Amino acid sequence: MNRFAFACLMGVALAIALAFRLAAPDLRPMHHDEANQAVKFGTLLETGEYQYDREDHHGPTLYYLTLPAAWARGQSTLASLDEQTLRVVPAVFGSALILLLPLLAGGLGRGAIAAGALLSALSPALTYYSRFYIQETLLVFFTIGFLIALGRYAQRPAMATACWAGVCAGLAYATKETSVIVVPAAAAAALVAHRFSRAPGGSAGVRVAHLAAGTAAALAVAFVFYSSFFRHPSGLLESVRAFSTYINRGVAAGSHIQPWDYYLRLLSFSSSGGLVWTEGLILALALVGVVVAVRRSSAGFWPTYVALYSVITAVAFSLVPYKTPWNLLPFYIGFVLLAGLGAAALVGSARSRVARGLAVAVLLAAAWHLGVQDWRANFRYQADPRNPYVYAQTSPDFPRLARRIADLAGVHPDRNRMLVKVMAGPYEQWPLPWYLRRMTRVGYWSRAAEAGRLDDVPVIIASQENADAVNAVVGDTHVSEFYGLRPDVLLTVYIDRTLWSHFLK
Image 1: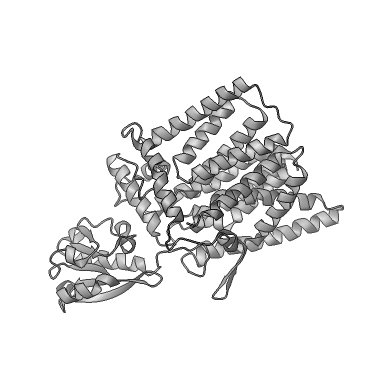
Image 2: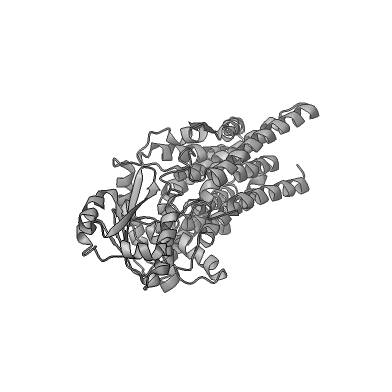
């Protein structure tokens, strides 16, 4: 493939990625994890203050990298933020991932990278979580940057490349704790692949110096972010202490515990309510890519390296009992690269121009099917439980609750200072703090008994566990309404009858 054709195909892939990731960012209600991140970012935006929380949040890069998006749109408070500002950040990083892939063209081939770029642009999984205000897409971007830098260093050791790898590793670690899986996996893959290639290694003394420089770069970058740009120097140590928290979560019993093959089943085939989903095209092509890598292992560093990274990370994430669907992204991007390699190998193995054209046509038709699923997953069934990528998703009914409270505040004398009391467990409270961010007097309690007097409160929101206690207190002084929070999770809204009557007028 010549350079012009390669550039055109990469441009097409980037355009598709941007279109799928940036369109209608507010179409899906905010997931409770997104809302949690958004409120954390709101504190940074309003006060300039950030402190790492090893219990309930991940690394800080997402928050700091959202600041330019908020500033560009003239937003300086949590109340002024919207889904577009927040979700544009992972969407941009998810699309910019394609811009990194040409750096692999020399090792995997232009055809493989062009095919891989197109598949990454169309993948429902990669697209869906690029539209989520969570850390995963940034982690994938920095991981691929590290993978490329480390591979280049393995082939030609140099101080600059070692530092590049260190910076990417530091950014990955400052993004999410699961980087402690992907970074060592890439390092192990590079070591093994290097043994089967003819790449020079450099002297031991040079390698030690390079390792020291790369490690120093990684620690420096991680320290800058975790210390909140030197305001809280203990932040980096806190991130290390967080390992025990996440190890316990990874093995403890809970609703997120899944069997070892959870990710493969999620990607290969899903059928619910008449809807069928599969990214089997990518998995099948990736298997071909693995075969190609094995055949080239004696002379080809990059195919072996990418294959080993993908397999090691897939096995590692699969062995951890705690699983959420977005955790598949760090290894799935490796599968996508292998799928590009497999697609290029299939086309290249055709012995005639007609056979080659037929192979391309079949692959394009399969890619079109992938694109149809991508559209369905993100623009038609974006919050539907039948969508396999939907996980504990906020119900489309829930924003209606927020609009109801805003309408009630519009007729209340206190307007946005109208008192709202929320009685629900932590799991049922989110994403209320995001949707009620413009209300200045909202209180949160786990139990109704802790919330004080209720009969004179204009609006009360209660989980089903608290509904009986609230009913016993307010009696007929309030009108009740029901709103879906998540599948099988309801919230009851109690509205003062006087306020309700005034609203009806």
